[in-house]
Image (tube, rainbow, N blue to C red):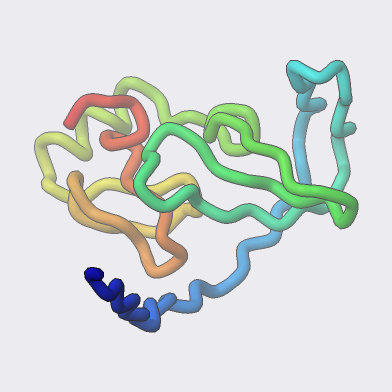
Amino acid sequence: MAQTIAYTKKLEVKEMPELWKTLTKDIRLKSGDVITKGTKVSVKPIVGYDRGCTINNGIRDYRVSYSSVFKVPSENCIEHAISDGVCSTPAGCRTEPDGYDHYGFPSWLLVMGMI
């Protein structure tokens, strides 16, 4: 009879600083819920998924797109990011066009699928 041995490996989780944001517009969710303008939420990136983030309004987590929470940069800003080699992230930090900031947010070029 074969014996099965289970190995467990402790995963190292890098603790990211929390980012708090006050919403500048209402967010309507597929469930029909509405998170109203002026609500202070905690925003966290989704690891391995560059197109969205999770927000928590103190009650529960919601998965939303970055454009629901942050102002999308103009076409002119995107052109500068491509030519300069320095891009902003939804959190407002600067990083490489294919990089992530210290909060774990991807650059806007990654969010938009341009890279």
